[in-house]
Length: 258
Image 1 (cartoon, rainbow, N blue to C red):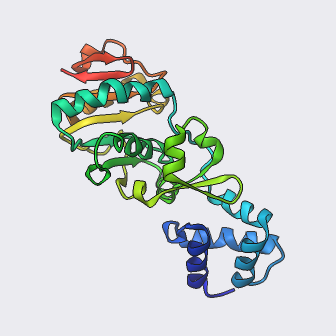
Image 2 (cartoon, rainbow, N blue to C red):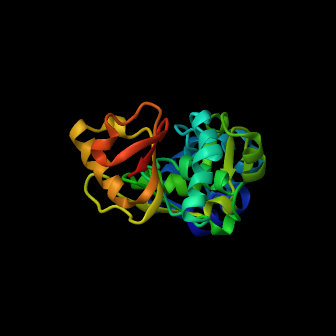
């Protein structure tokens, strides 16, 4: 088979999926195996099948779709962010907040941050730094394709406004949201941290680290924040003795830099 570049263009037009976001060798090998499995011999034939055969389209999207993420996880905490935390940050630091989504995984968190912030400020004033150690996960996050289960907890206003349904079970986040998230590879244990931040969001990853590693990271998070900035952690990650790291509890799961 040949003309993979033309195939990528056709897939982009058909599904809004840019295959250039993936490493070509691995992606092409995987797609070639999907084509062979379907008994198809050329990329053009496969595109025709994607257009006309829902089962083949869903199988194709299934490979590209993120299945392990969850938008708006712990909704009560996101509500608290909107009613208490963001108004505080806007009053303290102004509307152009510098926010870091650390260990962002599949992108649901930074994309949710953009959606939530867009309720308060013009979307062109929003930029989220989003990092993760896993380069392949970041490639999927940048693609922005999610299984419908990932969107179960997301408020309808966001789902209707910022997602397009692709196939029967997948949703693509809009370019309007995607362009306000800057993804970068980053190792929380080894790399230097962003600085002068108004808020850090690091949820549901600290549980995987040792206590010693957590202590190092809490101190580095604190150093990265402006005075009276906020650290937002996961629902199973409350910081024991936050004063030890120069934090105080602002709200449950939200910590204020002293």
